[in-house]
Image 1 (cartoon, helix red, strand yellow):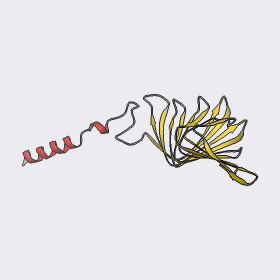
Image 2 (cartoon, rainbow, N blue to C red; image 1 turned 45 degrees about the horizontal axis):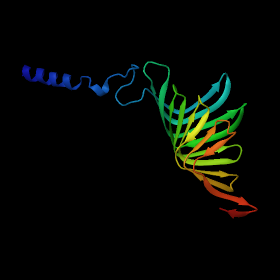
Image 3 (tube, rainbow, N blue to C red; image 1 turned 180 degrees about the vertical axis):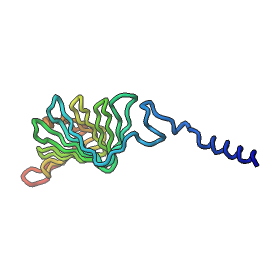
Image 4 (spheres, rainbow, N blue to C red; image 1 turned 120 degrees about the vertical axis):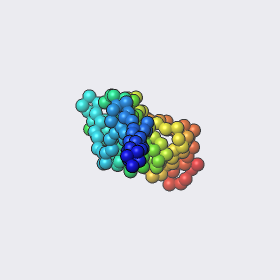
Length: 185
């Protein structure tokens, strides 16, 4: 009887030991496939030398630290919004279903059903759009559709603009423009 109890305790002890996928990450706090931080309805103001550059909002944000640093990589589900500002005035809005953020590289990536609106009347539709914060560039190589003032439509296979929306480039452009209320291809 003692041998059976000892064997049972040994089996129980072995089955409860740490498995490789349950080990801590380099940062010391991640267990298994769980994120280090999970945040609901995240709202962050992004500044440059104390001047507001953007506001970031994420529905469900899973953050993992990069090594032992203060930087993180995040996955965003349940909606992502970036509001852009220039001289404290909103200049654009980027909305998507999902996203990803790399704090260290300053990369914000909007994924799935991306809609980008500028206050100058442009609306861009695509499946991915990336804001390179340090370079002050918004870009994609994905197919895009851009509409100006609900009339002119421009299609392309990529898009680049500065984050002030002063100029833009659509790669391989083709489209339709309204002149005197008549469609012209």
